[in-house]
Amino acid sequence: MKNTRTTVCRGLWIVGMLALLPVSGLVWAQAPQADAGAEKPLNGTLSSIGEGEDLIHVLTVWGTPYEMGYAHGKLCGDRIRAFYLRLTMAASFEMGGDTKVLDQAWAAMEPYVPKRYQEEMKGLADGAGIDIKMVRWAHVVPDLSEFHCTFFAAWGDATEDGKLHQIRALDYEMRAGIQDEPALIVCKPKGRNAFVQVGWLGFIGVISGMSAEKIALSEIGEHFSDDVETLAGEPMPFIMRRALEDADTLDEAVEIFKTAHRTSSFLYCVGDGKIPAARKLRTSKDFCEVYGPDDQGDRALPNVVYWSMGTEGPEGEGKWNKNVREVLTSKLGKIDETVGMKDIMTGLGTGNLHAVHYNVSDLVLWVANATPAPEFAPAYKQNFLRFSLADALR
Image: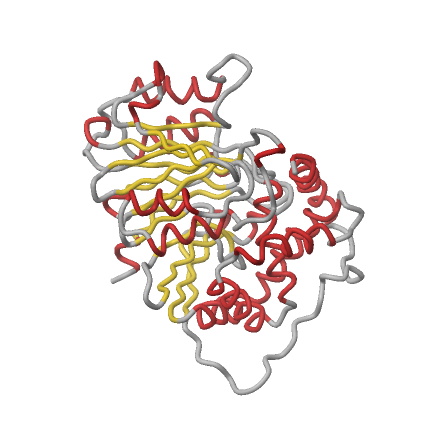
C-alpha cells in the first residue's frame, strides 16, 4: 500500500511536463459522446468569483444524485475532461501508462462506495459525454497518493469572536495542473444536508468542505504502517462527504468516521460551529482515535486542536507541529481569519494547492488556489476570496 501511494505521488509532478505532449493516443483521452434520448432537465447553475488567476468556478447543483451529477457534467464537460486527463495521466505515468492499478483500486473500493455516489458519477459521465471509468479513476487517486497538509480549529476563548475558526491547507503537487479548474461546488442533495465542497470541477467527493448544519472538515494524509492500510474500503472523499450530508452534530460526524470502512491512514479535523467545538481524528483501517483540546498532553492549547504534516516527526513533535503551535499560542484569544490566512498559511507556507479558512459559525469561508503553469505560484501567496454558504443557500 505504501509503495502504491508513493509511486502515484511521484507521477504527479512528471505529468506537468507530459501535458506538453500529444495525448490523442492515450486510451482515456476519448472524444465526448452525445447524450442518448431526450434532453434531461438541468438541475444546476455555473458562475464564478474572482478574476484572472484568482477566478474560482461556483457550481450549484440540486436534486437526486443522478440529477446533480448530470448537471455537473453537462455544464462543465470540457473542463472536466481536461481535469481527468491531467489527473489520470499523473496517477498512471509511473505505472508505464497502464491504468490497471486504478481499475484494481476501484474494484476494491466499489463495494464500499454508497450507491448514491455511484449514481451521481453515472450522471456526471452521461452529462459530460465521457466513459464512466474516467470518473472512477479520478475518485480513487486521493486514497492512493494524498500526503501532508495542515489544519487547526479554535473556538470560544481562543478566538477573537468566540466563534469556530478552522483551516484546511492542502499541500500537494502543483505541477500536475490539478488546480487549473478550481471550484466551489454547492450541493443541495434531495433529503440531505446542503454543503459546499472546495475542490475542482469533475470531483464529487469532498476533501475540504462545510455543511449548512455548520459542520466543517479538514484532512491530512498519513502513513502509520502497511499493515493498517487497505484499498478494500470507502474512499476518503466519500466518507468526508457523508459527514457533511448526513451529520447534524459534531458527535454524529465523528461517528461516521468511526464506523466507516476506512482505507488508508488519515488525520481529520471535524468542527461544529453551532456549539462551537472541534475534534481531531487519527485513523487507519483498524482504528479511529478521537482527540479534544485536553488530549494533547504538554502540547495542549485551550479550545484548540491542530496537526501539520502528520502527527509526529524525528524530534518528537515535529517542526511543522511546533511552528503551528507557536503561532497559535502567540495568538490565543485573538484567533480569527487573519491568523488562519496570514499568520499560519501564508506565514508558515502551507496550503500550496488550495488554502481555506472557515468561519464555521457564520457559514463563511475564504479560499485561495495555486496558479496554473508556468508560474505554479502556491495558493497561500494568492488572494483569498470570500464566499458565504449562508448567502448561497438563501
